[in-house]
Length: 70
Image (tube, rainbow, N blue to C red; front, side, top):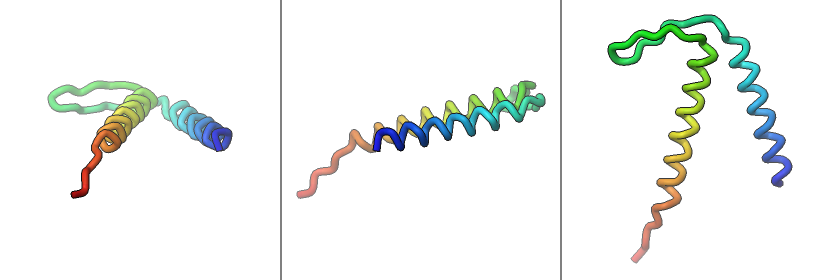
């Protein structure tokens, strides 16, 4: 089971790397009052990392809550 999870994770990482390297053209990104020009690969990487972080925080928050049934 652990081997299957490792293989799945490696395949997903490989797919993410392919998508990032295929998107190198610059894009304008607007956030609040700031406009930044960055490669689309950087934007995708930052978005991916933020999504992973939010997912971890939500998972930890949900696993930390244990409801008592009376």
